[in-house]
Image (cartoon, rainbow, N blue to C red; front, side, top):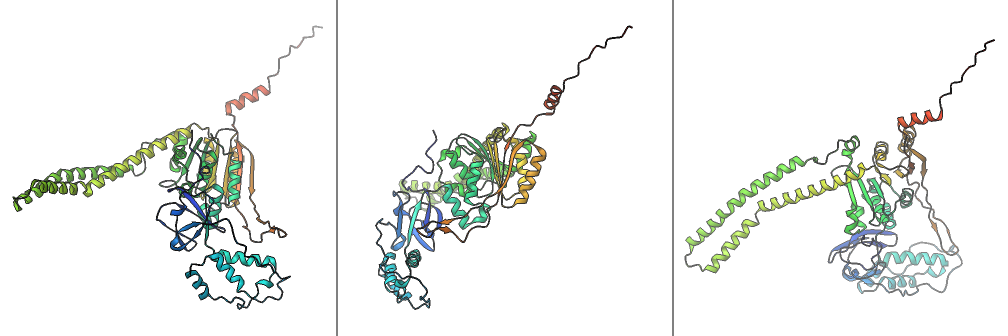
Length: 481
């Protein structure tokens, strides 16, 4: 049975990945004791968050420590409000408190909520504003002076919003609603075998793994020396999730299609093995020389003082032994052994991924990368079983049009669709619900369809012959007259 998914835990533990939220700003961090975390130009410690529930709101106190905030919030709204704002002039003189006064209040230990109340009381124009303007003013001041942080459990939606707001270039401008459509159109579910090719720092991969819940298998295609899974680690998956994750390099995909693939040779392996052999040889030489060093130490010690007691001699021998043991040669040998072990593990996992691909029965394909999708799509579709969905994301339309044309010419797919995702946020408040004026112009394009089995030339010939049977010979009667 798979371990619980990332949404099952309720308490924050040390080593967990969490998401810090302040207003509309998010940041993913790992919980560690006495580790300084910088968030929104403030440094904090997450020690007091350990053992608390996810979703708890904390207040930053002195020294960067967190203190759970009470749910009871004193109302700072006044009883009086103006009819309109036509007579209010923003000349910068309506606030009696200066910056120095506010800093003095902070030094006295006055919290942000009390500072907001002081600002309201010392404003000469606040009571003349309308009720909506007063709420907007209070919200703005709370955001500036109340240092409140909410700790959330990582999820696909939260991490997608975070990356799109902070670093959209790293995820190929992939918006969260587009990612949701990809998971739905790709029919990602538990127990399936999915091929994922993405260059979105592991966000798409983590989303697929989260939806599968640790059941099934995921084969990640990657380019370069290794896959990038920075966003995948932020999900905080248990170890069992990674046991079902396989990786395969793109530079060996052509050999796998042609049937000439072998996992015995890895780029750079020969040089690495030579380095390991040389380091091992040098380590052996240094270890052989170590007894001579110890002997020299003992000889020098015996010559200097003949009255040295046996316990002191033992301590001297022990010290020399520790020096020889901790020599750089031993460290290099350990590093070489560890590096070789990782290479063997990587080769084993790659061979397992190749075996899964050679079965050519994948249940789906998800493609979202900065590379041109056409050659990748045509190659990877050969490993997808018939009647299975595939989804391709690209920020621009032209590469997907080329994919669309080639797939039509090649055949083997149906229900091809090319769509553009569109999203508009709405502000929903009493008596003032309306679409937000600021919105993203576009979120890329999606090409999706379903694979089908193609008939072989022999089957096609047999089918045509069966449809057009040969004409029967008719016997012509001769006229004897």
